Length: 518
Image 1 (cartoon, helix red, strand yellow):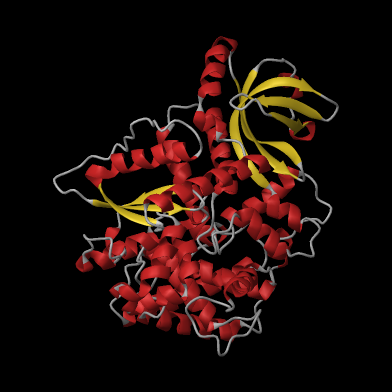
Image 2: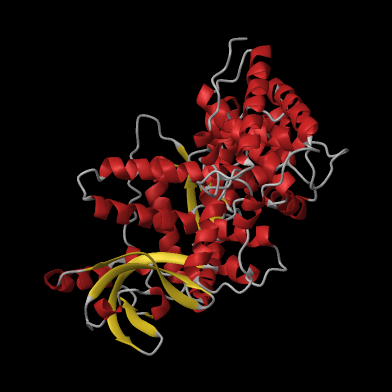
């Protein structure tokens, strides 16, 4: 086997929540190179799995970070295992747990992490957790960790980094802590950390004509937005939820961390101020927001009543804090902007729904569901040709309007879907959380009403139904609950593995869209 290039300290520090080398880093860097040799050797024993050298370098660092986490008791991995056990009654997906030692290194941990990391880098979804490379590589890495377990040094700096003062009330200090979890923690770096890198690179490319100052502001806003909006592939949780769980329920800020967020950015009118807050009116909805002065360094800019500002804010401990960027709009643009914002449906949806608004939405969905079921003989799903879809939806809207005492008239519905040479079948599903949903996966539903079901296209449609984030969790589960025994896909080894771990994998594949919202 040819001599491999070494992994250097810069690569190791790239996935750390700190950037200055600490005394234990040299030891763990040496371990990274041992693990790399083992991964390369395992790859040479079989045909290979399509990993680049740089991928193997990063995977080596990530696996050693898992080992460092266990040794240093930083509670990252143990939190994932605990939550998975709480949700599914077993420590990990896929693997048997006959011999599993909590808070210690385990070969099953390494195998699962290899599956997870390899998926991230190759997108080989069907690459089973039991493939030859995963098993061989996990065994070789476990041998290394086992030999080092008694002698590995605890990284006290790392443990300190993953702590938060019990008395901390400053939103910005809390945000820094959450940021470390989201973007610089080994378990999430290949997922949310690399997503931040990708989107930042795209932003720089798109906005290369901007000044350095403007570009820096845009990058900060992007990071701030992703921090509160991204869900991890593992368990589909947000970074603030992971932060809370890593600290544990015994921490004074646990429940505040779980609820921090509702970060959004929109246009506001400056209304007034009191001793503690700046009062802003959300232009689109006319709703008032009190933003704590603790979060604003440039208070003099908020003295001008009637001025318009584009700004972000997030809720922490029951207070709204400035978060992200703020841009004051020139006076010559405010009149037109206010008019446009008042009429903008998109802008009205930017702010978090109140409890009353959520209840109204739920009631509307209940009424729509009743009409849908009446029109479809109590079936939650229907199969409609593309050429007839506009008429189908128009009839639904008309029937709904009649049911709530409005005119039977309804605007002519146009989906914008063009009918090609083949008049395709569309799955129309009523999702109790979002309303009517359309999906082009008819061959995942072998219903007697689906006359165009094609068993030869069934595996592809079923696979797309499960893995495509644009298709809801509810529709995927409807398929599993009602048709799993009639679909050949679920008789394959891969299909059986999905059924055994369906919710975990739906969270993994669908990410943020796992949580359907109106």
